[in-house]
Image 1 (cartoon, helix red, strand yellow):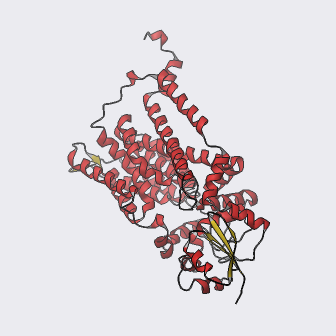
Image 2 (tube, one colour):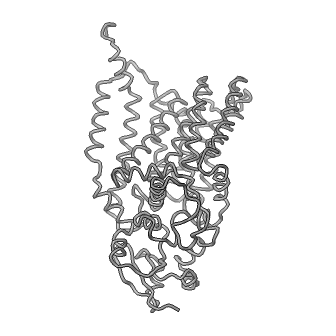
Image 3 (cartoon, helix red, strand yellow):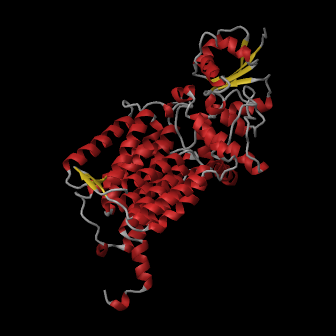
Length: 507
């Protein structure tokens, strides 16, 4: 190419439509394909709330809380949505994400929620790819490592505030890695990140752990087998310590002040919550994602032993910490995937050829990017089809019946549906329980709910304890068999998902 032809426009095109950018777009296309296949799979299954779509039970109470904050400009401090624990303490500690979800639903309904999910998940995956590229210096190995991590990342592919938490975690890790490489100005972004983070999700604690690990690793140069530590300059360490202190102070910038931090710490000490709900249970190694976790962990260990390339101690420490947390609580498999991808990319860089910018094909890359974008637009599901998927998991038809045929209350409900009942009734339907389990354990409601839904021998006395006069439960649930056998309970509504019972005889 002649120098005269090397115009600013051509330079911009080469950077904008480079091969690394194409690989990032390919990952985003894979995300949309993954979501589309999941929705198509669920559409072919029988109705039931155990099928993961793009939303889940918690999505709806998150939106209800966000809608309430948008309407009232006040942050709740008590559980006003329940008749079982109406005065129990509950803080909207994820309010910023909830407001975003409510705004998306208000603007475009289910289609806007799927668009929000696609956007947030794409940002997560692209940031994982960027972090892996930064660690390895090879976009090809970074792409492969991100693709390998994708099955574990997929466990968070539903609309929830925690998606924003993972984005903030990745921004923190990228800033730390760039600072380690000498770009120290990136650190000053982190206090603002933590202000947003503490108002969005409790994963901010992982950010503090990552900063502490980087700070400890920066103290001394050392080499121990495949592990390497590189000391930072004193002014670099001082800047990191200052930013760490600012990030801790930033946690107080929330509507509840320090009480929010105490409240979130208290959730981790709720034994019923931690033992009953799947995301807090130990990793299930017989499940596909548990098997894949073991495969990636074994690949990491073998790579450390076999490959000659050293690994930085802070990166290895983060992986080991994340693996430990994932084994204890399976919700941390996403954290594990995020911190493992950069190490895998460094290992795979020994196999993949280096990126050669001179071989870029910006015109071809631009054409493929346009094709990806056109495919997303053309095949993006309609609101009607997405609503049908929601209706397979949530009791919309039962709610329509209740509006036309009110039944005596209070009404017992499945916890998975509690959020939907709150959202669909705009807070007018007081629920027995919903997905905010932290609001129900201190008063004993959560433990009582579990005895009723199983059901335990004391299920009927517990229903009487709360003066329950109607029950909305899943048609395939065990509680249906118990109520069917009771002469004092009558079915008044039934569809392929839910059954509504009314008590006809009160003791």
